[in-house]
Image (cartoon, rainbow, N blue to C red; front, side):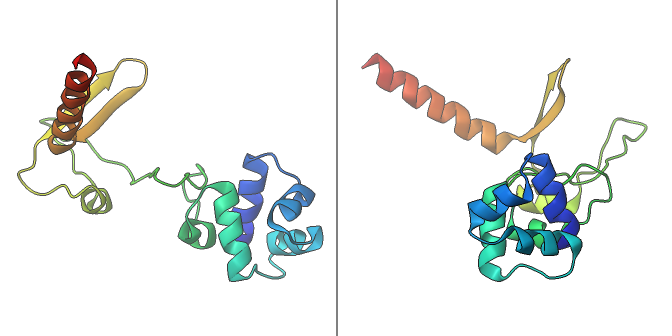
Length: 142
């Protein structure tokens, strides 16, 4: 798992093994062994690699690429697929509901861009955004 993730991330960032080794202060041979699965990086190296590639430590070590999209950067998620029902309803995956604290009865705003697709935003987020925007606007007037 980690060996495939290391190789995929290095190639995605267009680094050579030598460049990765330099950036995290290990030998090129160590990087090669990690990618071949002959050894695994220690905790300090894993932390340095996660920082270098801007991924979580958990994803670096445990990610299994079943969809072929690779490891997402920190803060970006792929929660799975939602099927649209007969009346247009979708089920938001539990992991997404938990992360964004979406509960039964919450209002969600559906935004659309014909070129980029749909976005679902909890109404509470937009309320905070607009309140902050109005506050900044008032400060600018003063």
